[in-house]
Amino acid sequence: MQDIGDILDNRVLLVALIACLMAQAMKLVFELATHRKLNVRVLVTTGGMPSAHSALVTSLATGVGQTLGWASPDFALATVFAIIVMYDAAGVRQAAGKQARILNQMIDELFDEKHEFSQDRLKELLGHTPVQVIAGSALGITISWLARSFLANSL
Image (cartoon, rainbow, N blue to C red; front, side, top):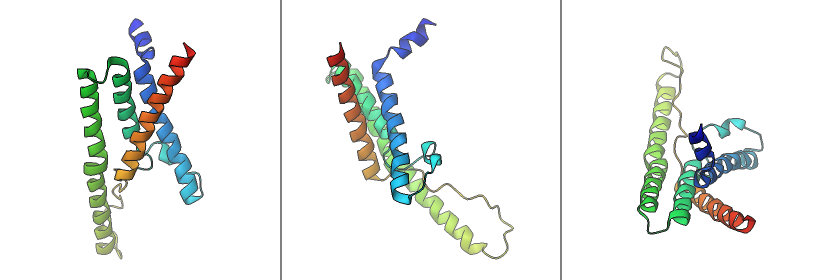
């Protein structure tokens, strides 16, 4: 049971999770502003503005740097991890989404009259645009800095 208590006392982890949750909540606001309707499904789907993955990993890396030092091997590890996640979000998953869009279009055009083919469509919104990744990163860094300032002032 002490292990769970230790996890709950890990401020770097908690702040990173808060950054991720805030990014997910902001997706709801962006969706409402863009499409003028409340779509709670965006809270559990991939893609969208801002990138929750980017917010999570940049907040984590920033928290590690703030806590253990900017020259620490732990910060280096967290930063490399963040770069890989953000590259994947904007690169690999974005490309997979484009492929899904093309495949869905091909299926629509080939089987538009008699559908003897599976009606399941591929998910097209998988990744993030570079702007969404940058916005998520900025959010993660900002939340870490604000949390650090808040905790320093409250102690």
